[in-house]
Structures are given as structure tokens and as C-alpha cells.
Length: 286
Image (cartoon, rainbow, N blue to C red; front, side, top):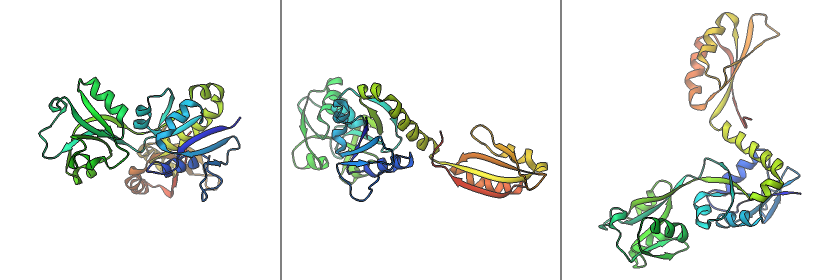
């Protein structure tokens, strides 16, 4: 029984999703001709390309066993899924925004009957209701930034990562509805029936994320300088030390370090007597 994985067919999270699966060892067989379905290099896993907004429902309904999509879309659909992993990319916030010259500065300034334009009517409606705000929701499929300036709405909700687009359109943020990122989700029944293969995929994905920003440093050092070198190396569980067979008094030292520490660390290790230093990229940490 194959595992069907739903990922976005286009948009800002499509390519990162494809790359994540590839790094996890589940790359697509055909990376050029993207079709609705694509086989992968894993014989029991197939990928389904669809709209990111449809993925929560497809996973909840069992049309896909697992999926990659944003928390904002999951919350908007309000469906029953199993959350497996936060994939740590695609961070954005769903915010309430008004024109810069609007007297509205916070939720308490929003008057009854205010019109709110949004691509997220359910999520926005629940949030406003929770805060006791009686507003009219107008659903738009895009370009919500223009709504206040053409008389369609008084306020908008929009998904933003930096706020730059809102500022460019002379809008100011007055509140945040939801902080979102990309999630790996599963159909609850599929998880029970296909738990082994789902956990295999999850382990591969988790390994890619754990390796993000990490490098493997490998070096040789005379035993007389070993203590100084190992004290300088911050490894995940301490450096690994092994004998170098071709030289009686030289040992090899390996350690996983943060990418941002590599530049200074390599120069420090060299001064402490390290030689033959290699810095190696890491694909996965399991």
C-alpha cells in the first residue's frame, strides 16, 4: 500500500518542499515534467501536487496520507489532522491592517459593522468573534491590500513575513491573528494504518532539519596537542577521536559544529596544532 504525500504545486513553499523530500532521500523521479502525481525514489511513496489551500482538506479526507502546508491554511479549513512536524520554514503572520491615516490603532478601536476584507474568512471571523468584535467579512481571492482604498473594506487581514508589502501599500498592522509556519501533517487513520512508513519519512525529514546549519569538522593532530584541540571543539556530544594508522603519534578528531562557528574555529584549531582540516557539509543527522 503506497503512501501518498501532498505538496503544493506552486507558490513560495513548493520548491522548498520538493528540496526537503529530496534531501530526506525521497526525491522525485521526474523533476522536469511536473504532473498531478509523481513517483519517487522510494518504491512505496508517491507525491501528489495540488494547491496549498486544498492540502488540509485532502489530508483530512484521506485523499492524501500526509501533506506539507501552512498552519494558516490548516487553521482556516479547521479540519481534523495529525500534526507531525514544524518544518521551520515559510514563517509568516496573519495580521490585521488598516490605512496609515486610519484612527484605528488596536482591536479596541474597531467599531461594530466594520468591513474586513480577507483571504481567510473563517480564521478571521473566529478571531474577531473571540475578541467580541461584530464585523462584516468580505472574502477576496487576492490583492487584499487595495481593498481599503477602493471602498471595499475598512480593514484587511493579510499574510506577511516582513511587513514590507503592507508598508509599501501605506498600511499599518494593528494586531496579529496567527503566527504561521509550514507543517508536516497526516491523516489520523492513515497514521494508524501506515505508521511505519510515515515514521520513516518523518525521520528522514527530521534528520534534514537537524542538519540545517551544521558542518562536520575533521582534522588530524599530534597527541601532544590533543587536549587543547578537543577543548576548543564544541561537538554535539563531544568530539570523536580515532587513531591514524599511518602515523603513530597522530590522531583524527571529528566533530559536528554550527556553521557560524566554522570560520573562527578553524583558525583557532590551526593555531593549536591541528592539521589536514576538512569542513564537510551534512545532509542529515539521525
